Image (cartoon, rainbow, N blue to C red; front, side):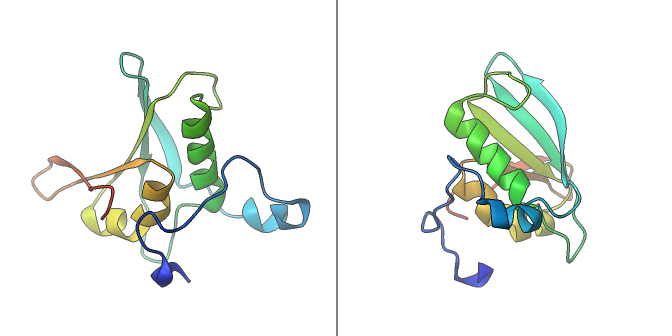
Length: 123
């Protein structure tokens, strides 16, 4: 099903949580996104992510970030206008980009030269 996803075509209902009988599946899995900082000057939350082949950002993490952007507030209570998820490498960023981009998250990665690169929203 993930291969069928196209930029800006999938709808993620981040306003409402999962229905009760989906909660066990929705909340399964270890955290992959970790808070790496907050820039109060532009209300940007930074998260780091390292995923090995076969690992993925959890659905509840994508939902939480999408909900924070929609509401303008992080679960911590801080105001947020932007969320950046920074991956250790290009391959992981490309594998995990689609749901994050679709909920409005900026996806970045460190290149071989150590420079931080941002994926375009339609990547």
